[in-house]
Length: 174
Image (tube, rainbow, N blue to C red):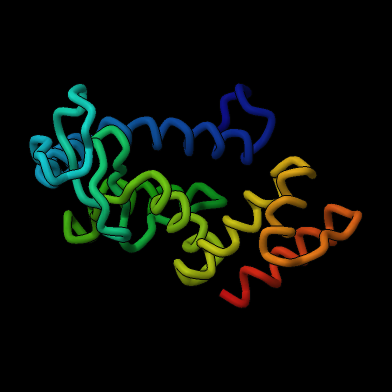
């Protein structure tokens, strides 16, 4: 089945996933949907760059963004797959063959990343927002982590793990 190009089924499925996402990125239904949800830039959109021609509103945060900073998202996630049979079902969901345009929404890049994380972990959008914030904190340089903790009135610990736990405590209180 794998024609000796891939070392195993996992490598083959990884190839299919990438190619399928490439198809989705240029899928006409997606392009038409995005076009229908964007409009010419207007004074009150908050987008002041003269280079921005079309804007749209994020379905999650309700802010306006340049069309290039918006993504078409499946409301009910297409999910994932780990074998050939699941791939066929996933591909059908990806290309909207089961729910149509009612399963699409326009999200800004940030909200789309968070929603994808929430879908993957089966948690709420709010929980995913906090998780992503903690991940971003853990990637900061030590001096920035300490500065952020000190600004919240917390004396930072010496270790990265300790500082991340301190920050998790702050996030959970919010």
